[in-house]
Image (cartoon, rainbow, N blue to C red; front, side, top):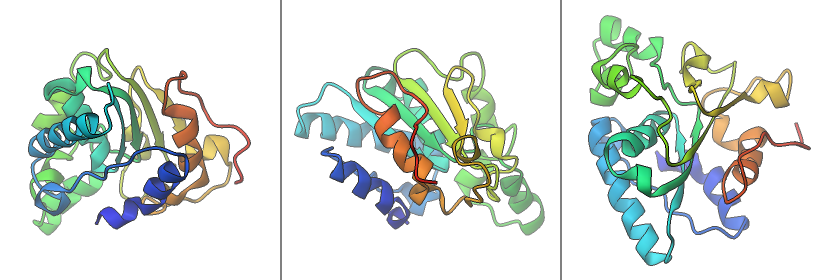
Length: 203
């Protein structure tokens, strides 16, 4: 549900930003390539509506993979200024592999998030962060959905864990959109200034 993004949306709105939440394709479990094309349409609409030359994109969980697919293959390279990836299985998650192999209940996006899937192999070939936007990736070492959690690491991005700013934090995957480090990153990583690790976070 997009309700999980409410803390991010509210923080950005309080900061004076125009915010659009991208409706999920297939209930959020549809083909990641289709989701990337849908993101492209939403970005075009937002740029027109707000008379903007670019957009900043925050992708939570699989949304970070969708954003990177959009940048690489679906027009995002000339439209995105920043991509903030939050707890995203950029190199796959063993949970998806387990769901596919043991439970047998793994929809399209789930299968695409298996380690070494065709989609991720293509996405991670050559440059993981193509020229255009600046990439930032944050994750929690306590993430129980993205396994291993550092699957979120991207070559060429500003990479950090919640624990590198707030040692001892036990933020779960579901808790990332409301985590103080993630919310502080909205200010320190989005916008015109170079992205930076946030300071003075109320851990």
